[in-house]
Amino acid sequence: MSKSQNVPTMKDVAREAGVSLGTVSKVMNGITVGESYRKRVTDAAEKLGYQINSYARGLKTNKTYSVAVILPDLEHPFFARLADELTRALMKRDYRTILMLTSYDPEAEQECITMVRQNKADGIIALTYNPDLEIDPSIPFVTIDRHCNAEVPCVSSDNFGGGRMAAEKLLSLGCKKLLFMRIGSSVSSEVDKRAAGFESICRMRNAEFESVILDDSETEQPFYRFIDEHIAQGKFEFDGIFCNTDKLACLIWNKLIQSGVRVPEDVQIIGYDGTLCHITGKPLCSSIVQPIDRMAEAAVSILLKNNRSNLPVLMALPVHYTEGGTTKEVT
Image 1 (cartoon, rainbow, N blue to C red):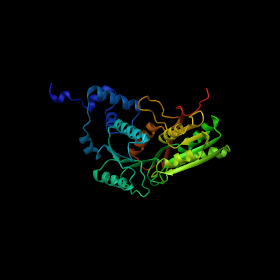
Image 2 (image 1 turned 45 degrees about the horizontal axis):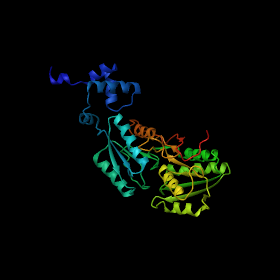
Image 3 (image 1 turned 30 degrees about the vertical axis):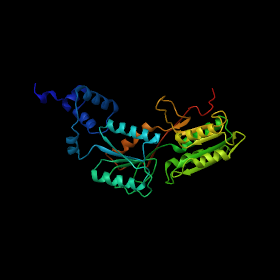
Image 4 (image 1 turned 60 degrees about the vertical axis):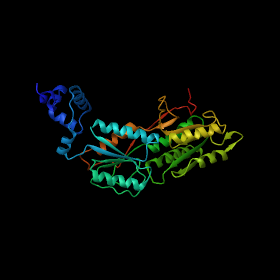
């Protein structure tokens, strides 16, 4: 048998999957088909050892089959998980990920977009901190959490609903005086709605509360000083805290313990993100969980749509609460 006869073709894949050649072609070219059809085709291709010639496919479709993902860093657990899920969602569609890290530098973000334009990636998914970002309208673009302009879709979790959920939970667990703590960017974003949702429930329930918000450029030291100033005789003035990230929640938890305040016996804490410990797989703290896998899937699906005439301005996906040891759950 000749070498050419040993190499499986798209017709072989179609025959093995029990679908039409057109369906195989759609799957191989990243065009949306029913999930059951996509799985049958990919399973058949894997079984037969069929490999896509990406270079030839790119010449035929005038695409690079690569997408640039622009993030601040991979040190923050949310960014690391987002990069992982975006890569998975793109790989499912046979797209490569070009990961670009900006260290929160607005100029670096603009340089990344310039590089993408020069190297002809098929689109950009970005979480940016540059309010004046110049975007090439010819390049498909989707943002995470931050709006660039009305033409650029934004994918986020339901931050307002998450803030409301955190306040509701703390109050239902018996907290009487609540505190919101956030380190965040001065650039307006969907993340700002966490505070708005939290405060709306506090006002609705006539619950006493305070908000302490720091800029990204600051350290956690002002938070630590605030805690020291509000501890009297080993008792913290607030008994319920909502932090805008799990990372901050863990820092505050540690500071309270060092100050002789018990968590969750004296103070209950809820974070935001749903970060899991990479060793145990359990939540780092009680948290409002972002559906990061669904956010990534939505961002990729929107980015790769063929018809871009009716894209959503915002897609906010629902969140849920998980217990992680920093709240007193009612059994």
